[in-house]
Length: 448
Image (cartoon, rainbow, N blue to C red; front, side, top):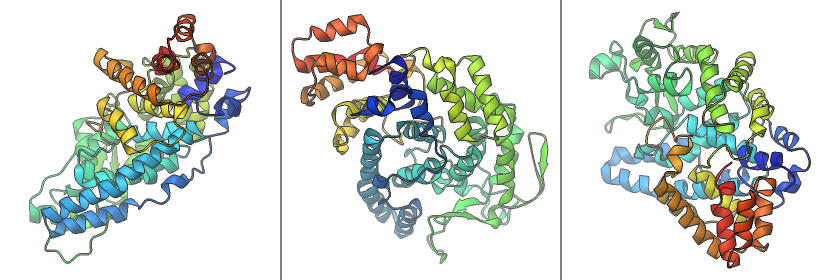
């Protein structure tokens, strides 16, 4: 590896060092990253064969209409056939991709717009949700990603908006169901403004009213003759009539379009720019984001109206992102992907991927809350968690077929980022397996 900048490009912006990666980067790591920024993101070939979310959801909700046993069997079938298989394909793509910066941003934005299989009925469709709502927009417009995520059947079901009815709507008066504020609250708190973004409880309630009627075609009664669909549907009968007032602005009655108008204004709110910039700088620079960097990225976000290609270029151009090569700790998923990029090259099966992630508490699409997975070191490297990492890495090293000597392996993965003590320890390892294990367990590999 040629330089510290190469290490940072491959690890902090990418997903670790794979075969020939250092040669791909060449002598200009920043140029290599900038070349990956392309608003025309295509679905990776590995993922194209999987069904869309609408067909999965339609099948599950049709089974639900037939009773709990049919629902259980159909849901399990989709977990087995689609969910697990797509997770493997997704990981293999991450392990082998030659555009890892784009893939890192898929992971970042998927976590930002977290949907978890803690709501089991829509769990099988979650990889499709990422593929449909997040992946196409990582270098596009934040507004488009927000609207795609919020209007996706997975998000509507996860945050219970598919059942939300305006108290004065036709359906609400008849069914006597209450307004559900979950989706409105999380859009404001987690997706746009941030918890300190200046909204109040009344803004949450009014926004929730605007979102009533945003549901999907699976939400029909078991005795209903209505055709089941797995797609977004707006049902006017569930929508709270009248104007809504959010963040000091009045939105006249406009049915389905009300919520979209509110979200477009949220994207352009200064608090959204600061909140998104803070998360991005925390992810790419340091757990405690430097205020100057946050201000710089927020300005680019605002000036470009949330153009994520421009924001991504600005991240690459931050001077501070290139200064400290080991500023961030890898999450367990990042650790597994970077380890398999180094030693496996895309052959891993479901067990190889799932078992360590279960053990280390970081299974994909299984975040414990809508906040998603934390992005700070203390969550991932407590003593017990660190022990689990090292145990898994030792097992990988014992089976890995690393053709290089341990010292050469360290050089290929860390290069100038490797400290003198790490180099000595690896050189004095009693066996090749032990040397490889020491490389993988080193701070230089555990951090990015």
